[in-house]
Length: 102
Image (cartoon, rainbow, N blue to C red; front, side, top):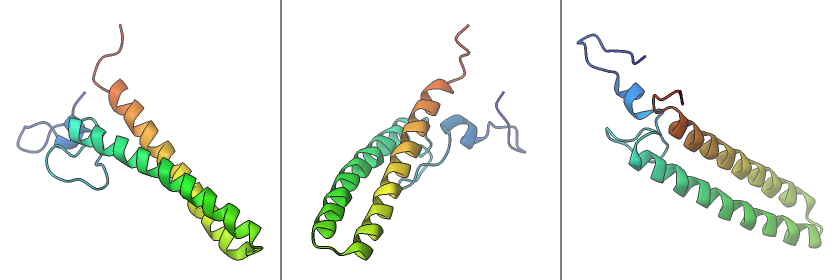
């Protein structure tokens, strides 16, 4: 059931889903085409960033620089978190279209 604003219109947040980082405007929700495209872009960037961070961690470990390797390992874990968040938002946006499957 969609919520309405005080003037009787449907709430835009309900229509377009949760706000997506990096884009704005009326179609910036996770259920809109622009929002889903942005989530796919963020998910792809996080994969590339993860791979680069792992490469840097390996290089620092080979050079016996443990502190820098730990820093980049934490950044790599952040990339995994962003990937998981974007994947959940993409799956949630497609299953919250109002149909129950019945």
